[in-house]
Picture: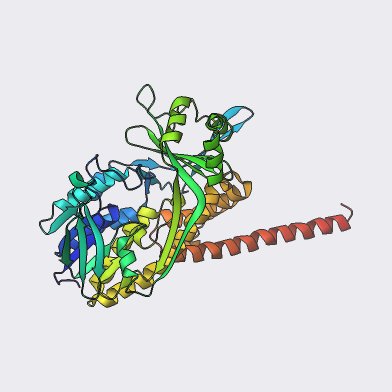
Length: 463
C-alpha cells in the first residue's frame, strides 16, 4: 500500500481514530473521518455515557505510537499537559491513624502519565485538521456497509433537529479502506460480522463504576500527592484517584452491583460506608454533601470486556482499539493498546504491498495480543483492590525488582514494567511472566526444602 494514494475512511474521531487518520494522512492518502457525535473539541458535545471517561494513564505503548506519527511537536505538546505518576499510593487506616504507603511502579524510575482524554483528543484533532488531505464529518452515524463493494452509508444528523420525527438524510460513501475506531459498541464491527466469520465474546463483570471529583485545596493546590495513582483497596472493591492538570483529582468507585443496590436503598449509609472502607476521603478530600450529591447524580456504569477474531475483512476493513478489543480499565492499557494497534496496522500496510495480506498480518499479530491484555486487565483488578496489601505480593515484587537491578543480563522484569514501559507484545509478556513465576517458585521451593532438611539434620544431632 505504501506509495499508492488511497481513500481511507475512518469511523470514530476519538484518540484512536484521530491517530489512525493522522497516520493515513501523513502517507498522502485522502482521508475522511466520520464521527457519530458533534465535534469532540466542543464542550457542549455530550459523551456517549453522559459522563467523563475514566482518566487516562498514558504509558510507553501509546507514547511510542504517537512518536511514530512523525509529526514534529505533537507528542511534546501532549506530554507537556500530562502529570507523571511514579507509583501507587495505598491508603489505609491503622490504629485510628490514616496511613499512606507509596509503591513505585518501576525499580528503574520509569513512570506513567495521567492524561486528560479531552486534551489528548483535542491535540490529535487539531493536528489532523492541519492536513489539506483530510475532511472531518461530525454528527454522521454509520448505518450500513457493503464490504465487498467498499461502500458505506451514513445518516447525517442535525443537532438542531434532534427531536424531529423525520428520518435524517443518508449519504453513500465509497472508499479504498475503512478503519473502524468507533468504540466498544462499534457499528463497523457489527456490519463487518455480516461478512467475516467472526468469533466474538462479550462479558460484563460484576462491577459498576461511578465517578467522583476531589477539588483543589483552598490554596489552589493538590490535596494529596499528584505524582501517584491513589488507591483505597477494600478486597471486593476499591476507590481510586488520578490527578488532573487543574489540581483536582478524577476519582472512581469500582464496586459490585449488589453494594450499589444496598446503598441506593438506604442513602444514609453512604458516608459510614466511605468512612469504613475509604478512610480520609469523606470530609478531608470530598465534603460529605458533595460526596452524596456526586453518588446520587453521576451514573453507575457497567464495565465490559470484548474480544473478537479476526480484526479485518478482506482488503476492505480493519477494526482497532475498543472496536476490536474492549477491556476493563485496571491495567490502564485500553487507550495505549488502541494507539499501539494503529502503529502495528500501518507497519503492516507499509511493508506489504497487498492490502489483503497486510490486514491479515495485522489480525494475526493483534488478535493474540488483544486477548492477552484483556485477560491481564481483568486479573489486575484483584491486584489493585486486594493484593497490594498482601505480603506475598510485595515480596515477589521486591525480588523481581532486585533481580532486574542487580542482574540486568538475566532480562528479569516485573510483569507491570513489561506491560507499561516496553513495547513487548502482550502475549509475550504473559509467557515471560509465567516462566519467571515458575523459576521463582522453583527457587523459593528449593530454599524451603533445603531449610527443612537442615532443620531435620540439626534435630537428629540433638541441636
